[in-house]
Length: 143
Image (cartoon, rainbow, N blue to C red):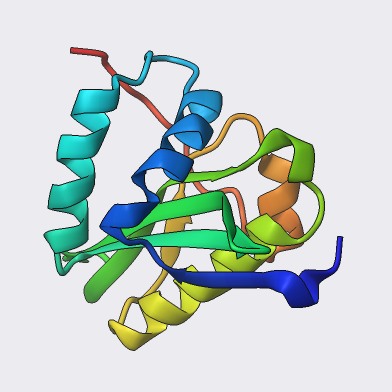
């Protein structure tokens, strides 16, 4: 893949048709619903504490990163959290995820974040290669 053809940009409402199939491919615990996705996308795009990036290759959306920042006590300021990052399976291992993470880290720095954190069970080696350290266990309760 020619990474010169790759662009990372803020998502737009018009990305809905290309984003949804990537979300479906990413999801493992839930089955994404198109209507719920579209309603959430509008709210996400309007939220000033949320960052939704898309990776675009030859004018086609091939990946995305959804993250946000929030204030904390423990870090003496805001921290940024990567909630979802996904790249079309046929294009993985081509630097697209790295480019999305790099742009998100730039966003986090611009917001004064003290750290970037995320939870993963499938991509530990990827984040280690980007300089992330394993720090905690992740617990969840599906409601």
